[in-house]
Image 1 (tube, helix red, strand yellow):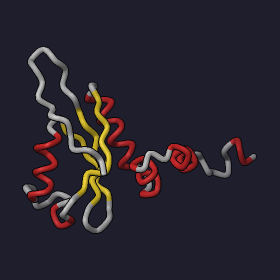
Image 2 (image 1 turned 180 degrees about the vertical axis):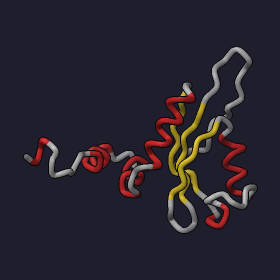
Image 3 (image 1 turned 120 degrees about the horizontal axis):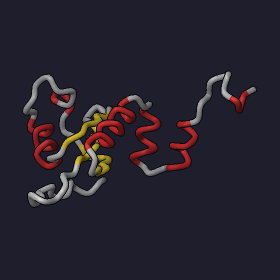
Length: 116
């Protein structure tokens, strides 16, 4: 299990932190999101604040992965990238299985240079 989010409270002169996170839902599906207020956002998910949210009917939830960014654009890019990944690739990321992540990231297209 991943450690709870850090307290994102920042002084006015400090940069904000942005978190990309993966939650495991009660049906074992994954939900990927981004926030600058991780504790508040996780609580919103857990309490079912938004009825139209993917996680609403899939509670309880468990935080499986988090990555902090100082640049919001990098965080958004990473979140969108993960959302396009297969379940197996997300699982490899969660488990920090870099070898499996590399294998799942390789192009398997017949036109790829490795297969010519």
